[in-house]
Image (cartoon, rainbow, N blue to C red; front, side):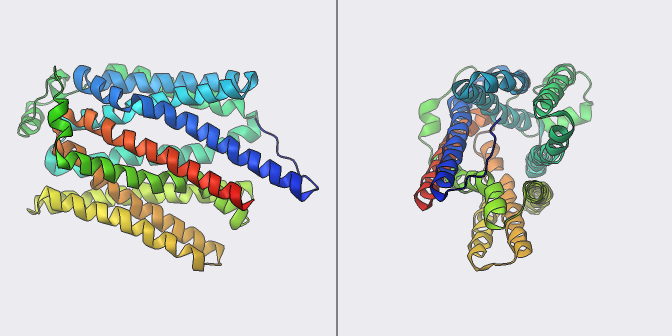
Length: 365
């Protein structure tokens, strides 16, 4: 894709670094803009036609866009950015669809664990990608990575269409006892026909959720975008070491998300109000990363720095039982739309946070 060279003159090296930063900003921005445009539309679509079809569309779209990235890279930077935007579209509809499906399948007392389990699958997917990508590139060249991941998504899509259902009412194989348990939630399982936008947007809890999502993603996107650069340029790890250490936070997030989900659901079962539980978990999700990241300026040992980064991401995952579970608590019937609204603010935070960090970095070159 982009060949790195060693330039003898400092001024030329600075230009190369600035080019790298601009490239990162462009490709991250194009991906985020794709997500930004389809968040609310994906939520509306999921809540009206069912999450199964929307999530399936998102994955097959992502798979095709992944493979087309190879063609776009050969045609030039504008085409590459468009392909990244297409990939962002799939992400934009996927998360509201997942929220919609969970709201129709999972009882309140199991909501945090189920959501944490789903999101830990995303984390483990990132681990798998980080672990296998260097091997695929080394053995078969960088195009193999795009072919492999795109093909896996296509296989998943075929299985999903045959096995998945948007709600328990659509599943002919579900046991009557299970269907009764799900029905005790009292939520409407039928797709909605109309969206009460004025009512939704007039509720303070909705706006509190939107603001919370914005600030959560501001820190998360910056951390995930710049973590490999921090390992490589500050801690002086080589490319292979940086890739290996980037796996640790994702693994920690997969474990801690499920641990947080277990704690949250246990507290709900013991009688603690759902609102209190969500506030406790989100407080850990905010203050935990803040504490560990502030320690980095005093750390000179690479091992301790990696440990702080890992703990930061681990506590960040407690947000799965706070912010992300709260959409279904506030409006289970409109959970897809609500996630679309809040995640639109979250994606905007990711764009602005990454851009501001890039510009600050440019000023230091």
